[in-house]
Amino acid sequence: MKKDSNDIKLENDFWRDYDPGQFEKLSVAVDVLIFAIGEKQQDNARKLPEKELRILLKKRTEFPDKNKWALPGGFVAPAESLEQAAYDKLKQKTGLTDLYLEQLYTFGEVNRDSRTRVLSCSYLALVDAARVDIPGKPSDGGEIGWFTTVCALIADNRSFTEDGYVREKQYVLILEGPEQLKAQIQVKETLNGNIISRSEELVYNEGLAFDHAAMIWTGIERLRNKLEYTSIAFSLLPRLFTLTELQQVYETILGRELTAANFRRKIGHLVEETRHTRADYQHRPARLFRFNPEGGRQ
Image (tube, rainbow, N blue to C red):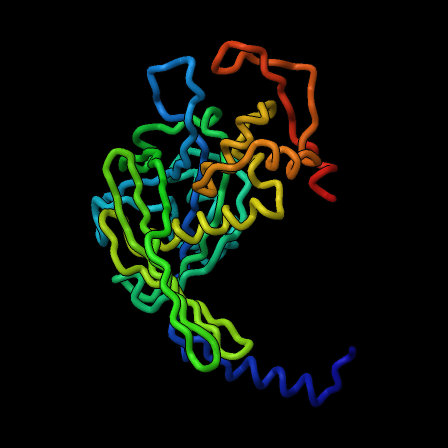
């Protein structure tokens, strides 16, 4: 639409008088959650290897929260997009490149960073742990390592009101790696008529920087939810895998056992059988499968 002379004059007046300094500046950061599925160490070679969910963390070398463990990340430069900043910080802090990143959530609590008001846009990345070589100390300094991640529901209380209910759930987050880290998250869900409101609060935190425990909990919840309607689990597997390995990935993320027959019926359209085999934990040939992207579009 062509602007008339009056609109042009008004716009010119607007830009002449516009002062960006009238607004308080906010800092923006990116933080990346890198999840992988690994195998627990065990002595019995004839036993099915157990899987564990891992996350990559880096020990802070500067204040605030010096010597606490944090997600790889940092501040966004004025000329960077959020996604480019996430890739740049990922490479700088871990040496990793060419990972698929998916935006997770934006964390904006007023006092989440003691330096200044900081909004953090978190990103989710999934990798096959066997294909990732993580240096003990990246180029920018500081220790880096994988942490086994357990997130469990420890309390679930509901009270009913005249127009609905209030439900409070308590989750414990335990990370085992170079150190043991712990946190507790409270989730409050309120039903008032036909409207459901929800809030999360980090009520306890030991060893994790800022609000990164809440970020990790949010990432695990997103993983669990996306298992139901996407093919996200295959990002945690090698190109060829057994159906048992695939089921282990689901069970590890969900934190519960699944019935083999029901599981294979549910995911049958997502996989296709190959002619390849591999000796399983009992040294018998096990058929290998691969992801069927066409099945994922159904």
